[in-house]
Image (cartoon, rainbow, N blue to C red):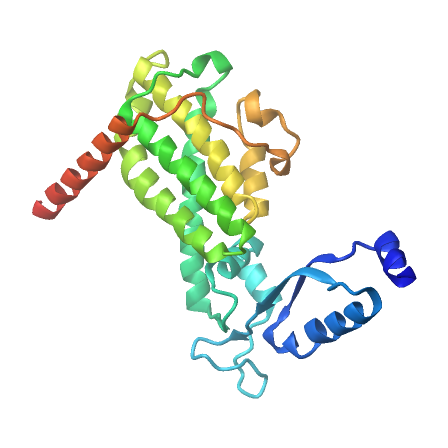
Length: 281
């Protein structure tokens, strides 16, 4: 009992998480469990994550004799830390994880798509100077895209708790490419680029972009910390969530309006029709 009290007083006991390769079930995971149980009658950790090992494109273990080793420093220098982080997030780390230059190039392309999404948001929010320019009356398509963001946020938070980073990566990429770049941004460009700054429709879109930016930052930050901080430092307006010292201090930002179910269904029906038209064309 004295050992137990000493451990709890001097350390974070039990540990939140043990993280090691899947060869440690008979090693560190097991030996520390046995030792801690004998001394304190409690396990030394609350959670255990076991990961697979990195292999080459053909699934072979990396070794100098095969000449298939990829130096982490070299790929960081070539692709950047965030691309390497995104590669890790894109994998199912519970299994063997493949790495190759072509695979990293593909991840780099997807990273660029996420980056371009944030760049579009920053560029069009450069005219936002005060909170009075944000409005609460939105069109159905605006409600739809913010509802999609809200679902993505909830989904991401649930999967962060479960360490399912690959599911977050896939859903984030789909949202940036399909829901934003290929649809909402595309249909908004005429108003953003041609309407006056006082145009009601342009104000609606700017309001949506304002909430899209903070929503995406909260999802992206754990995956792409350096990129998220870069985006946050380049926000041009100076109110609301932009007043924090760092992107890491962002708190939950709720929309001051709720989407009407009939409006969401209207847009979903429209998208099905739009898909049929594109196929016909």
